[in-house]
Image (cartoon, rainbow, N blue to C red):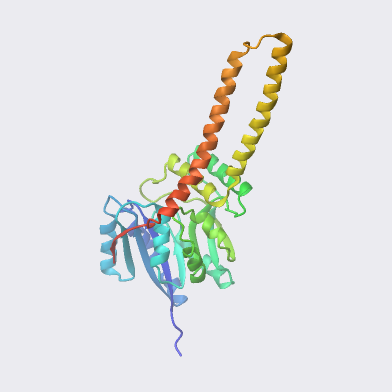
Length: 313
């Protein structure tokens, strides 16, 4: 009886990557001898995240010459998290791998990653051991983010982890079962569990173009990640409030005693102004933390779709 071929789905989120989709395709096709050796069929699933350039046209050209190329195009830009979720939903493979179109995720690592799957791992995930080519300030804050979230969250998020990972269908279905609107995939992949082997490699710079992630967008993404996988900020807000209540009580006692002894209740107004500004600032900070969690709940209860497909081929 002939052994049935297994299918590898290669998910490629794209946003304004017209210069890279063709080069990515060529790099993957260089692995065809490896796929043939493993008796693997492949599908390359490009998820266009509302690109404003000719990304969709370039994918259509590839599809015209290779029916294993598929296209899912969004009605607008929904973000990479939505593209990852759509790719997992639309993929049909027994194995699923997610890779960036800019070739910062080297396809040449796939044979090694499949080796770990053969050893019994459910997932082979990649992490960068260097941040060569990144601005130093971005690298500094990235490391601080990982240190902070791992300190407060029970879900471990590995420093330098990439979205580039090869997983079994079972793990992919587990990730899809978490259909939350506010998605932080690095945390979700870790939260669902499964046996994961980490593959380390040095940072690879983009082939063409510039990163779509600004410092501000990464900062917001980090805040979303913290809010998604720990409620520690809410606990810290409560403790800050308690500490200021205790401090206020002692300050009241101090003011009353001083006025009774020295009879000068009006002195010290500059320090009073500073204290008012400090406490007001802390109150606004606490409201901001509460507001961030509330906004996430607000977005969840509206039950809007994570993405909207304009074209699928």
